[in-house]
Amino acid sequence: MDVAVLSSGGKDSTYAVWWAIMKGWNVRFIMTLRVVAEDSMMYQLEGTAIAGLQAASANIPWLPILQLNEDGTDTLEQALLPFVEGSSWPRSSTWSRKNQDAAMWPDDWPWPNIRRAIPEKPIQGIVSGALRSDYQRTRIDCMAERLGIHSFSPLWHMPAEQHMRNLLDAGFDVRFSAVAAEGLNESWLGKSLNEETLEELIHLNRTNGLNIDGEGGEFETSVLAAPWFNPLEWAIENQWKRQSGKIKITHAEIK
Image (cartoon, rainbow, N blue to C red; front, side):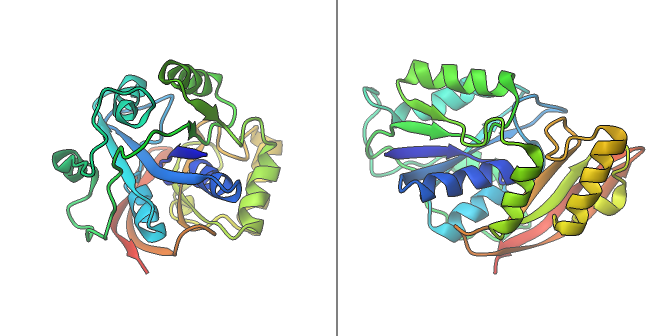
């Protein structure tokens, strides 16, 4: 099956790419939505350009999409139209959105050899890393139905602790890129997910009700290594304000 994977470069969507590859499917391209807004119920906001590096590292085409408000589902649907059966768009050997690419890519990151997604033949499905958000999954499923393709959410209702342990067992290098919850201070920014930090999250779940997998908005993540792509390296700066913070990725490249 030919599929696209919706990925922010975070732990859930990065795992979803691996799931599709392990199924033996052809991941035609990875698509990343950069939302320029204060908040989003649907999409990760921080560090999403890392998904482009992941794609380049694995030699998988990338389709970056810029969205100037919170809900980018309509923009996502329009971007997918050239890639579905019955589309009136030509099956071209070229596909360039250079101005949009520039808006997706930080000025001080080196441009790797990114392959751009081109609509050579239709895809049959879209894969996402949706965990428990009915709002997110319903909108993606409805979009897929309108486009006439399948929607897959391999992590749907995966137990939180099991999901985090699966990431560790599979060798994912997960870093905390934003935190906003009691018990998660500035020292968590850029920290790795490991057995020690997982135990801390489990403890905070018992004492504060924190979601171990961050599904309640407690934290966001970026992935620097996974079984399906070569490792990445980065330099970061912390941006902390009151009781929450995020990282700014000042440099990132393929090792």
